[in-house]
Amino acid sequence: MRATLIRQWFLCALAVMLAGGLIAGCYLPAVFVEQFLDAIHPAGTTAVVLFLMSFSLDTSRLRDTLRDPPAVLWGAVVNMGLTPLIAWPLAILQARPDFSLGLMVAAISPCTLATASVFTRRAGGNDAISLLVTLLTNCACVVVSPLWLGVILSENSSLDLTGIMSKLGACVLLPTLLGQLAQWPPAGQALSRRHRGVINFVSQCLVLLLVLIAAMRGGLMLRDQPSSPAVFALVWLCGSCIAVHAASLAIGWVGARALRAPLADTIAVAFAGSQKTLPIALFIATQPVITQQDVPLITFPLLAFHAGQLLLDAMLADRWAGLTRVQSLSEPR
Image 1: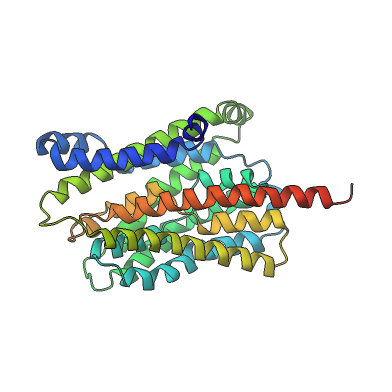
Image 2: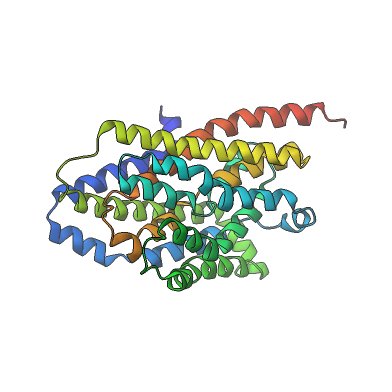
């Protein structure tokens, strides 16, 4: 049990932050909750997280992967193009408008900078491909995510796509590029490699802080709700999140095999094409065009999607690791 808790500490902490934030938002004095929320700037925290995650990425193998880009491009298409289409019908069928919109916000977010490469490496896949898909989707989301948001909220005439793009550029693209540039000097590379574990830990702690903020804000809004969400609505939401992620993962796998990608590349495309990043999803969900609507529980789908992908991909990574070991043993020496 202790070993399991250590290995899955982030998932356990995610559950604690979500539950604790909701309870605090619901029952602590509203003045205290609002002061705490005002003291932490989500956009600035997101930028710091993305800089640290980008700085800790091992990019030494990217040059070889760039020579054969079809797998990388397919992973990016699945992540930013096909996943929102998969989520759309399930979002329409949600019992609450905040669950519906939250599922779509999760779907239009880019690939996570943390766990995609971690799970790819754990499964014996080509983590250079997962790194490139991550960087490509995080840069593309500056334009693609606002465009998807414009389609989703097409009835909202006050949607400022240019403003959202500029905010994403400042909070997503800029820190991601700066994190990569910081690795160019030899001293920067050495610092990144030496302290990668510490940097990843700090980044994940900051993500948990963003989760706590989102949960507290949801709890604060929940006070004014006449009733709590029905159990069926929550179960259907969680099932929908897992279904979207599983479908994207399967499409990424099948497409990569159709491109005749090796097993290691296929694993990377499957993970990077289906995983979504929580900090950027939370950042999008806190934009005025979202918060001005009656969607107090919009963060629930984001957290449910993130927890579901961690659970499913952790199991798949261990299973696929066995496949890669068998393949490596069967290859001629």
